[in-house]
Image 1 (cartoon, rainbow, N blue to C red):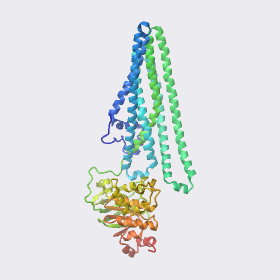
Image 2 (image 1 turned 180 degrees about the vertical axis):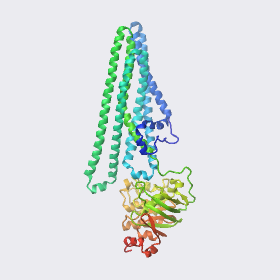
Image 3 (image 1 turned 45 degrees about the vertical axis):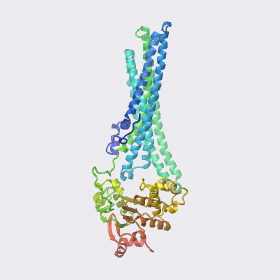
Image 4 (image 1 turned 60 degrees about the vertical axis):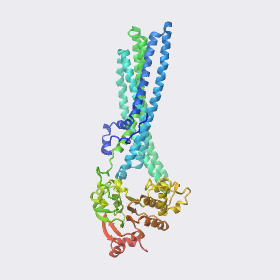
Length: 604
């Protein structure tokens, strides 16, 4: 039986934001957040429960046969009865084996399926979060939650939960049969249960708390390692390997010591529970022996009762063993629930306004003020207003920190302005679907993102459904075919993580090919040539000239070649537009642009 989710995995239960989730952590039941995922495969869950129930009933049938054999079977005239009992025992064993194997298969596959859905749900959710979240979040910690925490959950969902449910059913059945067999002896056994359960609860809370510390510490260590591996050249250039190793080693050692405390607590818990369980069994045997001698109970009934008591005791013992693991899993589920609790600050309106078709590529800023969430009191843009007509090419220049790149962030709706409005093709961005807006924009930043894939895949990132011919045409227009042809596998050559095997100029030409492939009406160039040598700049600039044809273009640039080809230049300083005009008119004004031109374009 196969259950295929029709609408994707459900979302975890979540509080309004991560801070609220942390504050209410003690009130949550983290493992319950996994139930919606498991219930998406309710058919398989039901089959697993049926198999578990059959296995438990088969186990509980064994003491009944033992009692009848002891009380009625040990005589010559009853030899046929003994044969029947042993024959039935073989049948029961076969049923138990088949049911147990089915239960193992079903719960293990459910665990794998649930964890796959949880991972997909977490990753999908994270990709929808606003850039403001990633301004504060650490990538390594997010990866830790996606990998280590979900692996912990897989173990619990696939094995531990099944073990607990099985033992609960077996314990309930054994306790019921104990009462039926001998109410008097049952009082001794059941009276010991609170003494056994209380340590389980107390130690479980302690283990869960320590498990959370271990997971958080490992996440911090993973984040630090991920950051350093991404900058390994800088690490080695500054000969800081020893410092990095010492810091990572200290974090790992802290996690080890926290884990060691948790392991000791679990080991002590197992010892205490096993002693209490089997001490109670010994006590019951002693009392039962007295009852058999006094004739209050038969030897077979005592044997039956003892077997049920052993089943109940072993069930409690096994539950104590997995309780610590479930506590660790609760900590992992808690961390994932916290992550899924974060709401995107940039959300699609309930009834988004459709962008006009065909697209025009018109842009307008109207009295826009903006401060980054990390620095809410510092306005990066202060009452910025301008408009760009369809097909117009506009350069934005100014000193570092003037707010130039922030204009692009707002156009892509990574953030919303504190006041004022940003419009695209006559529609306010806050009224439109962010994905619809971004689908009409192509971005070529100064440091373009490259992925550990082939050159073709990196170009196709601009339009995943593009054909091979479209990718080649984009590479030709971006002046990238020349170096691609020299690659060992041509377009299919892997370029390494972050495109490490390509030069700066080659990476930029791949990024331009990606933008060409997107065929967007609005092009954003964020200092796309500022870090290149003269030869690479010439090649990239030629590619940019082709890319800028027949589309609206906003250019953040310091290079004279790019600025001269724009229809207008906007000069920014301290979050404001202080000058506007052509290159010649702004130079003639003798203002900020003229000073920047003397510094940046001297000798041209």
